[in-house]
Image (cartoon, rainbow over all chains, first blue to last red; front, top):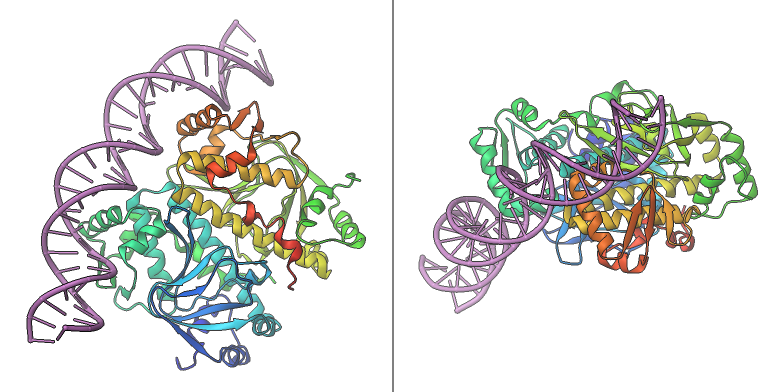
Length: 246
Length: 246
DNA sequence: CGAGCCCTTGAAACTCGTCAATGATCGTGG
DNA sequence: CCACGATCATTGACGAGTTTCAAGGGCTCG
């Protein structure tokens, strides 16, 4: 059942629209090879032209921008099952870096690969919705960094990660593997690593979160959601099924 | 020359790819009616299904999210010449509000309108690039809010507004009309209105910016760019022309 | 002329960043 | 097998940047 290389990507796309057997077949046949990267490796550099995009099979990657003073802002996570926005091909050059935050297994799609997939109307719809979800997440992150307290900010992000992993079957017993350092979280949330640490302990003391040796446990997901104003709606997991539309 | 309703939208799209006379004709014929909104009016509400998108002919609008405590985060500006991301049609429902920040004249495009325009390959490319630019801007905003000082943050945003207005011919003599209050800027930059005020005075005292009664003047745009680390690259104004690609 | 919105300014409180130092864990090579 | 260095988590003290509260002034519009 979960055998093919692209199975996790397929699992994800199926949350957006039901896929037929031929669609899945097309995904598998296009996703022929998996590339492995180590933590710290760069998958794509700014300035490069964009001739391929990635599907994350396993591990955590991210998009980030480096500032002149050396600090970095992570602008998006790429989690298992995530597929890059296919519209990236319309960028004349890349404006950010894609880096591996852990060991990462990624499938590479060329422009032609995607064209082929998009020729199937169902897959095309799924890919478009995938792009839209990434956009919604980006908006949510701006709200998060801009207007929430550090407590809400961190909790909210952990909820999001948890939910995104849950969708692709990587959560068991309120727990999942999250290979992020507190430094990574700091660069994401625009906080200092020290403050992420303190905030993490607040979450722990509140009995909401345990995060130790890459294992994230949400002891009471519902309570954490309430405490951090997390509404999973923006991940568009459920709503999609009802929606008609082209 | 600048007579048609859609001329400003066309001007903008031409920065992404050269348009033929027929393309422009198609834009004009589709953009038949202009709707006027007053400051404070809502153009679109969260929760609504998305059956139309807007092109801004005149005035400032924005996308924003309201938080439970009543604060708002503006997540995008819609300036004269701006066209909504056409991919919005793939969202099952809207996750944010679109509001008018000044008197706004907007053209409404239906799903069919856009399909018609996208049937022309050149226009389709221009619209895709338009979407990509909005994405780049969103990333830049996250960096701005996350990792820059208030001085850089405000200056950077003013640079962006200035540049975006320049592209559509609304800048003369280092000056343009910007109908934003300091409150609007605060909600955009995730600062308090008080601090925007103080920061604005810093910019003024530095001889870089004058902003009074909706008139923005950049006395030395180049110096302001240097001071605020503004690199207009992400607006993709120049690079687009060279790029081939589908 | 008053109401309302916007800009401005000051003072006090607080969140968060920086600096610095200590442990804990882990992989590696001697 | 242990020592070492590297990376990561943790903690305390202090200071800088920002928010909040409060109040006053200018402007426009009815």
